[in-house]
Length: 447
Image (cartoon, rainbow, N blue to C red; front, side):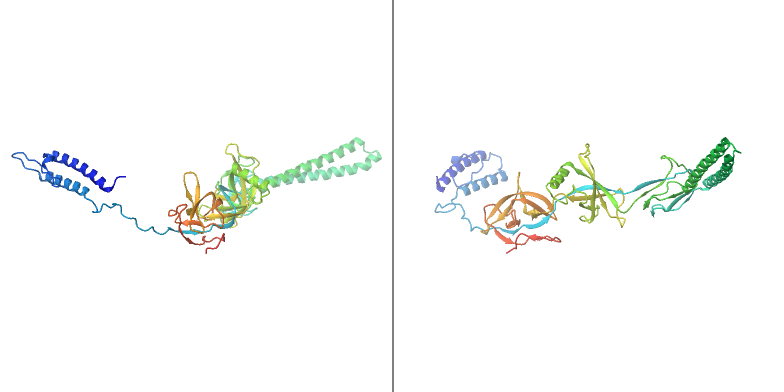
């Protein structure tokens, strides 16, 4: 290799060549100038030298001379000596938390009433009274509407009179039969006459039964003029006004209002095919409390809830998947004594997607990533960091489930991961991993 003095000689030659080009550009031959003097520009007769051009040439010449100066008289190396190495970077390390967890699957659900009734009249007539306020809570049997009962009262009176008439005929026919019986034995009355009296009696009895049935029908229709609630629940608004003519006796008759039950209430949600297969495999393996079993606990949250404060029970799973959506309809029952839930509302539903198991957990900030893998940095007893590839699970109370890659006894870099490098020493500060408002069991105690 060449020495630094040889480099300077070569550099000086290059600079002299460049100085010649500058002198030529200024109008003075390079041979007429000294090595240490700046070239002076040639000025033609009758012209003046621009001060800016002169200054520029002199500055460039001074810079070239400075490059050729030796930094030391002894020819030693120009590289500055390196200072002492700094301490290893400081990082915070913690052992992972270990706790019993359940993996929850979340779905969007919609509330629906257990019972919903469209209130329609069974008889036709004019509406004479409404006995509730719109949106009121009602009990089974409460009077809601009254249809004009007078035509039906007249029909009852008529049917009762017809029944009385036929009952009188029955009594008369019975007496005729009783009178003819001894006479026919004496031969005074023919058997034909006796048979006619007996047939008249039976005909009167049958007609009396018809009249009795008509009376019961008339009384029933009269009772239908008072429209009552068939369930406990909340009534909607009245769809008709007093004085309106109500059409009854058919499904297309006038809808007066509707009632939906309040407590308990149902929530429907759709489980995707992959999750349902997962639940069934857990069930086949003997796991309990997964979402494929009726009676499994579910948790519900309204849009403004924090967490899932409402509890329910799975009470229905459909018998086939929807071929269009690839989902299976499921349903849970929830208490609604406070009336917080209403039919038609949406909510988040979560169901247990796995049996309870012991899991290793770390905060997300302790996990690094590259193009293909997720990893953490583990510090050994000598303070050397090493890389561990990990497989991640779901978030659990703000921490990430680590399915494989680290154990509860490893010290993992949780803060300062950017300053640590695999294979290099670090200055670890050991701290216990803390999670607020959660009951945890740590994998080790900080020392």
